Length: 628
Image (cartoon, rainbow, N blue to C red; front, side):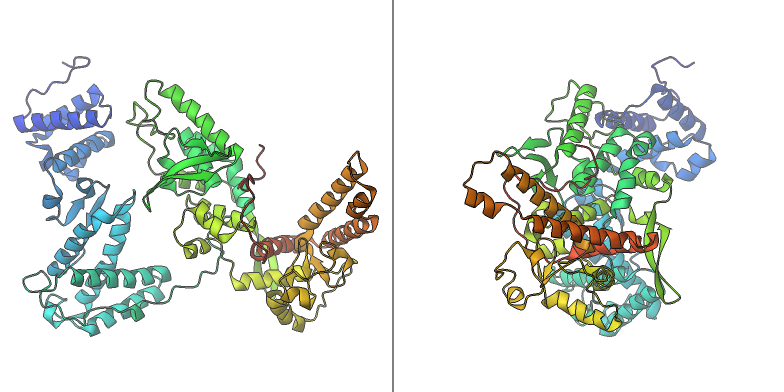
C-alpha cells in the first residue's frame, strides 16, 4: 500500500537498491526535485521487469514495458550517473564514445565512424591532448566537427582502397588526392556546402600534422610506418567561397517585426528567454555570453557611462565592459528586480541574471541554449514581407517576398549589431573593440558589402543626382555607368551632405577647399537621394543657429554677422531638399522601394572620414525606434 512521502524498495535486488539511492543522491546534489510518486512508479516498473541493475536496462526494454517518457528520462539520467561513477579521463579515453562531463565539458564525442582502428586511436590521442586547451559551452560541437573531417578521410579510404585503408604502410599521396577529389564531388552534388568543403580539408590537414608532431607515426606508436607523403599541404585547401551577402545581418524591417513580437516569445517560453533575446539584439554579444550573465552585470565607468560586464569565454577574456544604451540598462534593471524577488535569500554574487526555470531552487544556474525556443517563436510568426529585386524578362523588378526565416537565429543579432554600428560611422578599430575581437579581419567579415550589390545600388541612387541648384545632372546613357563607378572610387571626396568633384580638393582628401562648409554655393558640389537625411539635418542646424544668433546671444556685431547663416544658403538647401523629395514622390511604390534599398546599401559602404567617438558620445542604439 502506497504511503504518502514514502517509497518502498522491498523486493528489489540489493544492487538495484544501491543504484537507486545513489542516483537519488546525485539528483538532490544537482538541486533537481524527485517527486515521491515518480520514484515509486520507477520501483514498481523495476519489479515488473525483474531488472537486476539499471545498467542492464535498454531503451527497447522500457518501451516494450510501456514505461512513460518522463520516467524514461529519469532512468536514463540515473544510468548516466552510474556510468560516470568512478570514471576518470584516463578510463574514458579508452572508449569509443566519450562522456565529456568527465573532462569538465558537456555532451559526448563519438569516434565509432573512424573505420581504421589505428587511425581511430591516433585521433583519440590527439583529442585527449587538445581538450585542455578548449573552453566555452560548445567544446563538444567544435571538436566533433573536426572529427567529422577525419570521418570523411576514413570513408574515402574505405571506399577507394581494396584494403579499406587498413594497411598503413601502403597509403600514399595518391590516397590524399583521391580524398580531396571525393570531397569536391560531394560539394558539387550538394551533399554539403562550399564552406564545409574548406573546413574538412583544413581540419584533416591540421589533425594529420599534429599527429606527426606528437610522434604517433614513430616506432612502436599507433601509426607506425605511416608514409610521410600521406599528408596535405596549404595548397590543397580550397579558396574560401566568396560571401555575396553583407555579413548575416537582418534588415531593419525584420528587426522591427521581431521586436514588436517579443511578447509572443515570452508567452511561448518564459521571461528569461525574452530578456535574453532583447539583450542579444541590443548588445550583439554571443548567445553563451548573455545566457551566463551574473546578476550584477550592470555597472558604470568613471565618466558615468553605463556598461554591461560579461565574460568572453570563447577567448577567455573575463570581465569585459560594453557600453550600453539607457533602454538596455532598463531591461537589465527590471530583470534584476524580478530575480531578486524570486530568490531573496541567495547572495547576489551567486545569482544569475537569467536563472534556469528548472532544477534551480537558489537561482544560481543559468538558462541553457535559447536556440530551440527562439526557432519555435520565429517559425510561428507571420511571414515578414520584404522588397526583393529580381530579374524578370531582363529587367530588374522589385517584388514583395517573404523573408527567409532560416536567416533569423540568435547569432544573426551579432552581425546586425556590427552592421548597424558600421553604418553609424564607428571606426573599424573601435568596432573591433566593441565586438571583442582580437583581429580586425574578423570584425570586417561582419559588415562587408558585395561589389555586385553596391554597384547596383550606385546605379539606382546616382540616377537621382542633383547639382547645387537642384537640377538633375545624371545622364541616362548606359555608357556613363562604368565611369560613374570609377569616379566614386577615385574622383570624389565626401562632404557632410554630398560629394565634391573639384580635382585639387579630391587630391587633398577634402582639405583644400577655400569655401569650406559652404558646398551648396559651389559648382563642384553634387548630392543625391542617399544624402537626404544629412541635408535635412543640415537645414535644421542652420535654422537653429540663426535662431540662437538672433536671440540674446552676446557677441560683437561683426562676429554675429559672420556667423549668421544667410537667407540664400537656407533657401538653397531648402529648395534642394524639396527637389529631391519631389522626384521621389514622382516614383511608383515599386521604384521607391528599390531606391530605399539602394540608399541603405550606399550609406553602408560610403567612404567617410572615420574617427574615435567623442568623450561622452553614446553608441547608437540598435533599436532606434524604441521609446527611451
